[in-house]
Length: 248
Image 1 (cartoon, rainbow, N blue to C red):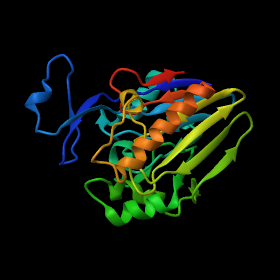
Image 2: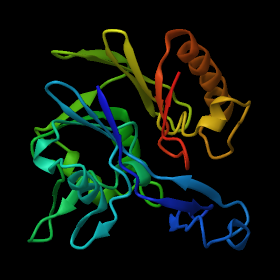
Image 3: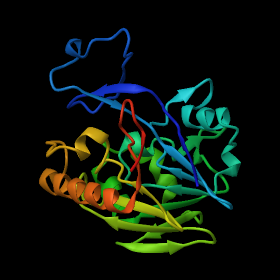
């Protein structure tokens, strides 16, 4: 399976939950509000024999009348019509901003017209009830009763022609956040999204105040790191500034 990171850039975020672009060469973190976190925003594409799988959809920022996400895909010679599956770990705005885009009439439509979208049903309900600033309700409403949405309920396994996806709700970063393992033969790709966002967090006993259950997230990271070592996983880190893909 081929893995392609789709960097949308570096950002700082503070308690306002606004993502502010950050230039690693020119900007100084100490000049940002106290408590600002420095993160990458980086969806991934996995290409199998029959599928083009998008893992999360980024911030959804517009660039030259298009989504940055779509421009990033096109730069890798992937057209939005070629994406066959969109996997959503959760619906926070930095992971779900590219779910939809406005058409010429100003209505939101799915950004990937030929893809099936895999979304936890309870995550969608929670997001719609909670709303701004963590969730962009207007952009997500298109998912409701859409025929291209495959609603997931709890943990499970999806089997396809040449690979399978195992998924589970953790309730760690957010109440209905899910992680997945994409498996083919002896290869396992682990996508922990915001439960496992950066390599350094896997190697330390880091407990984040911004997590729904910080202790659980920390313990899960330790568990996954050990399993990954034993089974030679490939880790994908959505928010890692320097190392998005880590092969054990």
